[in-house]
Image 1 (spheres, one colour):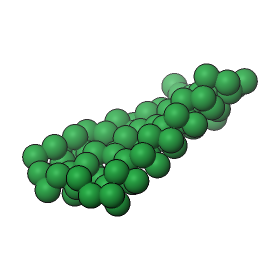
Image 2: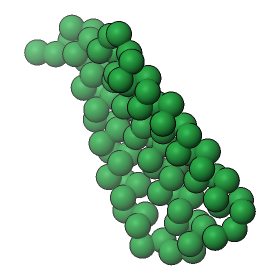
Image 3: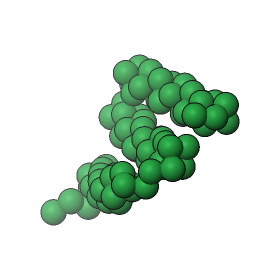
Length: 86
């Protein structure tokens, strides 16, 4: 692994730690929802960065699953908080 790869993954880990702190400390359910959405995005970035650093792209379908999960979760939470769920 190169120094750039280690720094990138380290910064993503710091971002994930800050997001988990926000999720645990957040006073409202909306704070938790946003924090979990950011955590999904950070994990997608980590999988992509790991694939580039190791030059092994076999794990890229995980990005598709994470993106679909993040999208469906965000839309579901948005509909729930807007009162539009029927």
